[in-house]
Amino acid sequence: MANPVSKGWKYLKASLDSKIEQNADPKIQIQQAIDEAKRQHQEITEQAAEIIGNKSRLEMQMNRLSEQAEGYQQQVKAALQKAAEALDGTVAAEYNRAAEVVASQLVAAETQLEDLKIQHRAAAQAAERAKMQQQHSEARLKEQLTEANQLMAQADQAKMQEQSAQALSSFDEMAPSDSTPTLDGVRAKLEKRYAEALGAQELAQAGSAHFDVNAATTDIKANARLEEIRAKMNKELES
Image 1 (tube, rainbow, N blue to C red):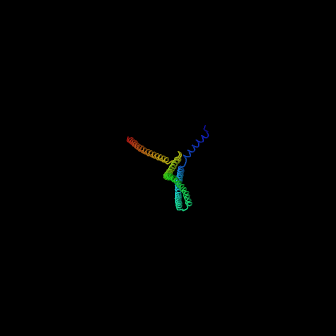
Image 2: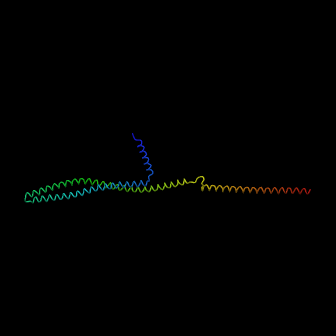
Image 3: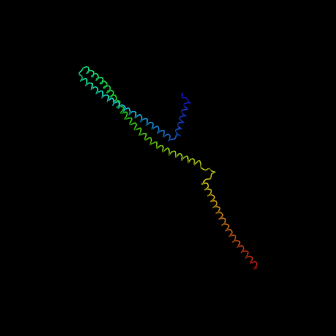
């Protein structure tokens, strides 16, 4: 049965790792990816160098054995030549034994040389594969560096957009409240007061015109009445 404490800790750790991943700085993650890509390329390069170096080491051993075999062969020829030229059979026998010993060394050197040639062919193939792998890794690293530069630029753009969004959000949060005057509010009040003033002026002018008309009408009626009274008085005086 699974330990519930251990299981809960795994869930908590996974949740924390997920949050850390979400909140991580992308530029730091890009740099970490670049460092890892460089490390892998360096490892592949070192392995390729070791494989190619093994091929070179085998070539040096082959050259040295070739020289030894050539020297043994010359010694065998010289010993056989002296054995053939010797007048004493004992001396001739000693040269022949010497030739046999050197011939054994020659065979051992040639056998070892053949083994080295087999190893060298395999090492040469491995070196070619390692060289191609290293070149492929180098090309891939260049692509990753180019991609990383592009991602760095995108990260900068994203950061600028986030800062712009935060600035707009802060501006919205700083928007004036109902109790704080705004330009639009002040403009509306001024327009309302101006309109009301125009309306009052229009009413005043209309009232003044009405008063003038009423006054003129009153004056006409008063004059007519005055003439009526004057005419009546004149008639009374004549009678």
